[in-house]
Length: 320
Ligand code: ADP
Image 1 (tube, rainbow, N blue to C red):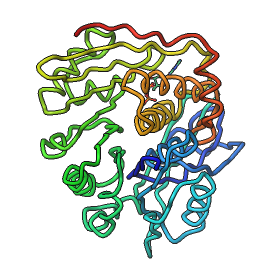
Image 2: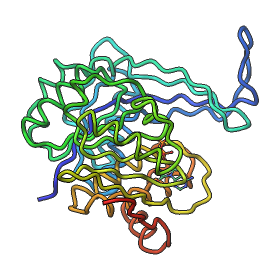
Image 3: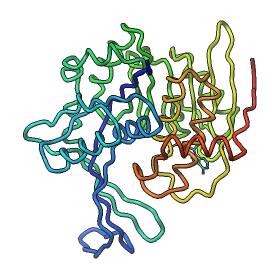
Image 4: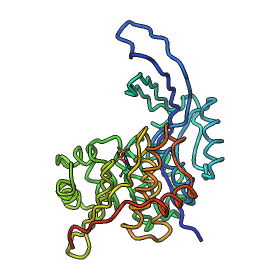
């Protein structure tokens, strides 16, 4: 039987408008190419897991509004079990209002709305799906008491807890103590450890701080450099740098979400951490070759073809 991934996290309706220049205070600008697309780190990572071939369940809260119903149908179409995605009466689906200017810079305002309801009480009501999952994947866009409740239930039932700590913010010791695998990018690693991550040496330093806080496996994603792995094994720390695939990047939105989806799917299929990270690098590289968030997430066939036929992503063992 396929291993089960449970993604717990946010859903947003991303309202995107292209403008020549961002409006100044009091100014109105005319935009073009208005679109409403599915977003939120939780939804993006659930889509990545499912599209890349993982048996995926999603736990989330949306509003009783048109977008809430539509996103559930889209997630269903991507093959995700949405039995734990609830429409909450009297609130809106989470929203991100995004201006994109001529230089591809963006300017974003977000409101959590229904995402605020993904709290400890909600998680407790759905505890059965946490107990039966093999992996729990979470981010930091929903209330911390819900994350802590889910992580606590997970460790009681041998469900591996993976935290992608985005957006970067300090974490409670209680939550840190429940995490098996943490997957920050360079900025998030610095927020969590105070160590500026620029290269494998500084990544090793940041990872050692996270090991010191009780996390056995640290995977730091480093954009076009690839990903750095540090694992506590017996009394040793084993570190590897898995280089990125070389691609012409056009839009790095959702690179991290796609990487995390690829990593989880590979781990559920029994790949070791290095092979799983290499596969995840391939998935992340494909995402940066395309525009958009959920639109840029590749299928499993595309990822397999890319990883098998494009050279790159060598692994360098740094220590044993
Ligand atoms: P985030 O999107 O969370 O900031 P990163 O920028 O570290 O995360 O990207 C996540 C992963 O996506 C990287 O570890 C790498 O595998 C892949 N990736 C990102 N940018 C590039 C790039 N320019 N070229 C190739 N792969 C990339």
